[in-house]
Length: 131
Figure 1 (cartoon, helix red, strand yellow):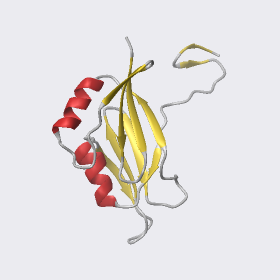
Figure 2 (figure 1 turned 60 degrees about the vertical axis):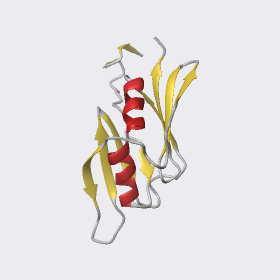
Figure 3 (figure 1 turned 45 degrees about the horizontal axis):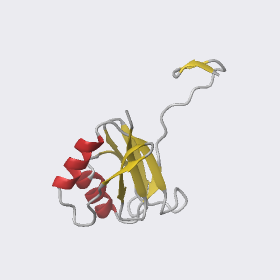
Figure 4 (figure 1 turned 90 degrees about the vertical axis):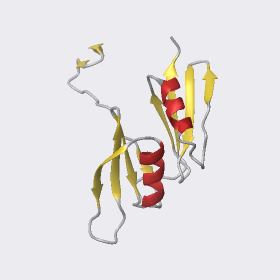
């Protein structure tokens, strides 16, 4: 039990999660996550040249890890992200005229949701809570 969101009573506290998403093509991952969604690459790692890439991208406090490693994640995963400013993000994405997707906003009982699909079958649901 906690008395506040950041004050653990049991001595255990969880911090923000970092979803790991499977990727198969670094150039396509950069095009989608950086050029389209507006994230910045913050880390890249290969155990040696020619081996799979493990890469981190970040924007506005949200971080994703993208991995070419077979055992790290399954393609076709869905990540749900509570978001503030969904209308502005939608306008930004729409203005880019990304040729592989033009997401809309769905008006759902829990909020306004914008869903994007990356080139590897993963879905990200950005959602702003209803007021």
